[in-house]
Image 1 (cartoon, rainbow, N blue to C red):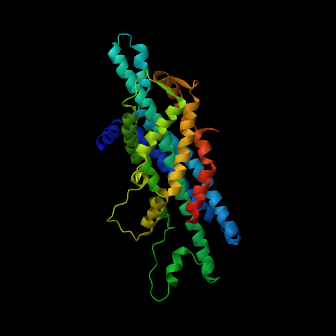
Image 2: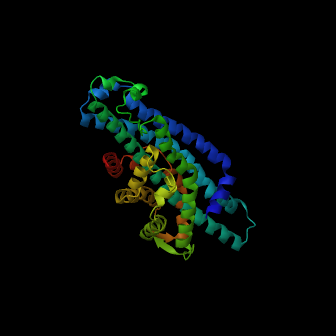
Image 3: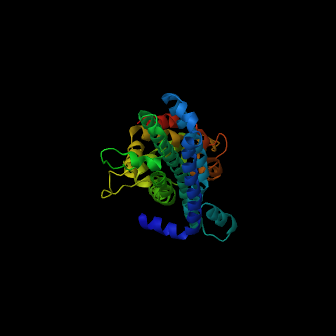
Length: 348
């Protein structure tokens, strides 16, 4: 499996590098946006009561988060299109008249597999990206609030001391602790997004290819399937992929020999604990439903042969990957489930 991922990475190195540029820009945007909540209006935030300040910081950071998720989508789409090529197979079937019957069946089988893999990869890729960034931003927003509350506990004159001079006033020879709100720590923490987009997505697609192939192995193109059976198929594939520890493996695989006491590791541990929580698994399932339901809406009849599902599902790809109003991504970003999950992480 990993060998396949490596071969895919080599074949599409240019596209992945281009995606990395977008990821890096988005990470910088998140860092700047979340930092500006504290720096641009220090008087306003400082004067707010604790509860009002928490709402203000939470809402501000998540508005920037939604835009960052949208900015990352093209990089993910490019990788899915390259790994599960549909257009080339369709072109061969349309423009190669001398294909034998056996060759046509082989091409149709590969087309069937790639079309299904695209749908599942988009559903999981977009949903995990949404969960990860929402969780990260909630964690950073909570730490920002904690920093304000800690400052308010200090004597009035001490709260005006710049951070760069605070070490001059440390009492009893104690040393300054590693600050999780340090810009370097925040930037390293946000690199999880880059890891997922550049390494997690290719690995996810290998899991998808394996699960889809296993579920399709007894399905023939001539088999008649209902829309209910197709939805059951997506659920079975999702069950195969959603093994324990999946999100940690794709987003932030932690080494046991790394210093667990560092601020960055504490942030990462908090992230992985929230991503592997029962709350996260429930929300992931609800996010996947937006994409699978949208794909099934492209099918006109309630019952038809599998070969007729393939073109309909192929045509659903632009709909599933859209970032426009009422797209699956838009609906998931503004769903009550993702909001509740963000609040859950923020308060954890």
